Image (cartoon, rainbow, N blue to C red; front, side):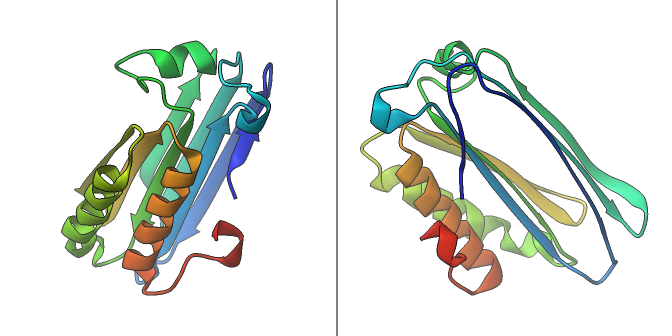
Length: 162
């Protein structure tokens, strides 16, 4: 489920994985900035998410996401243009690049189906796909990430995502 950050929250988390050459890994992390049902939409929160992924002990992916004063940052055009939720995802597999067009199609469908802002980008690199999405609607973001998970695994998202 999404991590919900409230006003003045400070969250820093680290995720590390070492994956065998023939194994696959799917990571999907979402965060909502503010308790939206309570009208908390412009929050001062700090969020840091550090990922280090190794394949057989060799670092193949590293990311350090940092958002300070989340409400102000996400209002900025180059960051979120008013988004209240973000998602980061990574798919590591021997055939990861073969899924790129499918993932892009699912994300484009999510953007087209939304009345609210939804933007996403995804890239394929050496053995993995990495992407990020931002949305003014946490529900739309959840639906999009569930569609990405379904496309990559052939199974519905875990029950906590529905």
